[in-house]
Image (tube, rainbow, N blue to C red):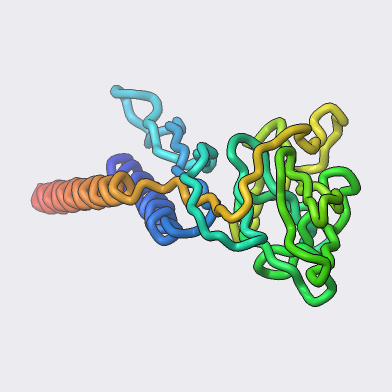
Length: 249
C-alpha cells in the first residue's frame, strides 16, 4: 500500500475515534457531573518506501491521549436532602471495589444501614476519618453547612469529604462519572481533604457539555471523514490507472 493510502487511512482511524468521543459527550449532556472530553492527536513520522528523491519520511496522524475539561457545570436545584454539589474545586470520594474513587456526581442517598451512599451503593467517605458516613434518619433532618459539615439536631455527625487532586491529568476514568488515581509515591501528592469547601445541599452539578458545540464538532468530523474518503478514492483510481499504463508498456 502506498504512502498516500496509509496517511489517509491513519486520518480516518483518528476521525472515527473522534466521532466516538463526540457522540459520548452528547449522550452524557444530561449526566450529573460529567466532564466533556476531547481526543489528543499527534504527528508520527514513519519511513517511506525506497526512492531516489523526495522526503525521507511521511507524517501519520496518531492519537496519544484524552483531554478532559474539568470546568464546573451549572448547579441545578433539586431540593432533595442528600443531593450535594461542590461549588468550586475538588471531588467527592466513594469506596468502590476496595479502592477510593473520585467524582463530581453528588446524587447521594441513605441505604438500609444508614450509610450515605452513591446511586450504586458505594459509601461516601468522610473527610476526617476517610470512612463511611453514618446518619440516623429517625433523628431528624440533616443540614450540610459551610465546610461540608453534616449537622443533625445542632450536632456535627460527620463531614463530607471533598478532596483536592494534585495532578488531574493522571486520573483514569472508571465509568459512572468516577475516576481513580495511580499509586502515589510522593506523600505530598496524596489527595487531601479540602479545609473549607463549598458544598451546596439540594443541588446537583450538571454536565459541562455544550451540546451545540458538540453537534458542530460532529458535523466537522463527518465532513473531514468524507473529504478523506474522496481523497482515498482518487488515490486508488490514480494507482489503477498507473498499473494499467504499465501493463500496456
